[in-house]
Length: 67
Image (cartoon, rainbow, N blue to C red; front, side):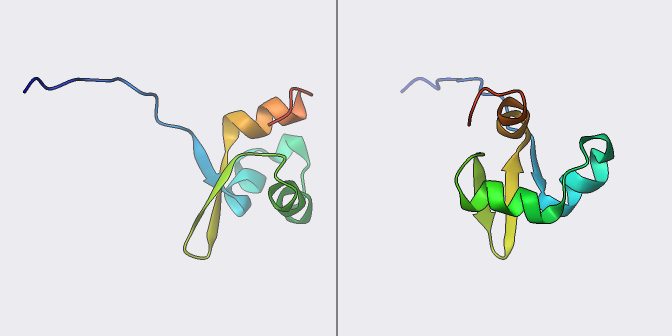
């Protein structure tokens, strides 16, 4: 059996507080970020009690491209 090497980029994921801290110029509140997650407007994954937001999805949404 051959080993198949499929290169996939690792998605850039951040918790809601990390997004707020790392990108203060966006001026997004944690409440607004949580509403985007709740309304499925950005791609995210729940890990235990933490929600990780896909940064590419967030930036696409903010640029008007949707999730």
